[in-house]
Length: 217
Image (cartoon, rainbow, N blue to C red; front, side):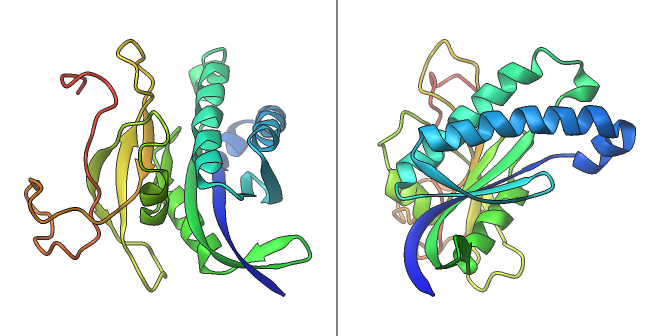
């Protein structure tokens, strides 16, 4: 069994059970169509499809930047697809991205690195993305994205919590696209904190920043 450091992307459909309960055939048809788009985008961003169970998708990337960029493009593509459908038939995915040490056997990957990505996905808003602190630190300013700190989150059944939900969008003054992220990183003790934040500078925190003009929010 081989160990390696990799960027893991986990995605699933928000409200999948409701959609299936309302119309199984239509839901499966939409899922199949959207999965083809997702799989194609994973390949285009040099990722590797790992597995799928029902409405979920797991992929890995050698590059953290590629993984996050892929997640952003997936959400933008699916948003455009949803705009052509009736509100009750739209399908929104949540995505989590983590950088972690995993074990690989038979093409599958295992370990806390995968588990954290799955937990982060569950923290994302529908149509949004959550990233871990490691990912946030690695991508830095390599991508034209902004971040808004929404507070530190605990991650269920993970020994080392420290996810912080944030929102991000492309750095364009004219763009109104908005994506949800989650990431935490170490910030200086001198940065201004919001009420209720940890005061210890050693805690994992994530800075808030808008990718658009100062008055965007």
